[in-house]
Image 1 (cartoon, rainbow, N blue to C red):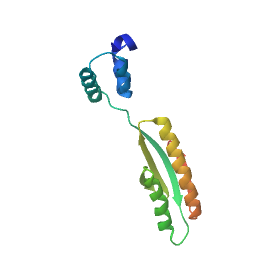
Image 2 (cartoon, helix red, strand yellow):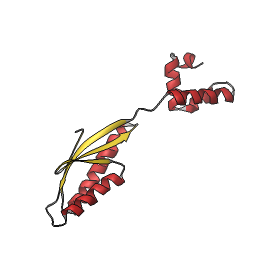
Image 3 (cartoon, rainbow, N blue to C red):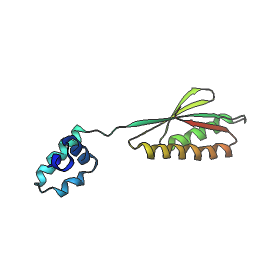
Image 4 (cartoon, rainbow, N blue to C red):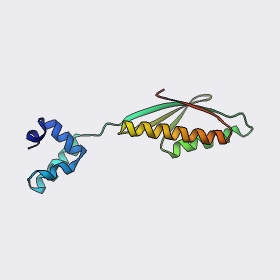
Length: 130
């Protein structure tokens, strides 16, 4: 049935993985649908990609270390992984299964964090894709 509907068996199985509701239009017993879903879920995995950015962050204030920590905490609160490279550079990563939504989220979080850094009187810049 899947091959008739989608031309290739693999394409059909992949579509079922992405949208299990596709099986509703086929007139097959529910236990067969459940068995097929079980096999598909074991066989297919969503591809996780990692988006990267480089952040430059420093402060000349007396309590600059605390200010920098606050800015970095904002990044981690939003689900980004932050790694120290070398003063004043940090690597920022986001893992996602949806590249377009991930890129939007990464850019949005970095821009919001830039505003927070400015309020804390920190120098902040970022490059996506570094």
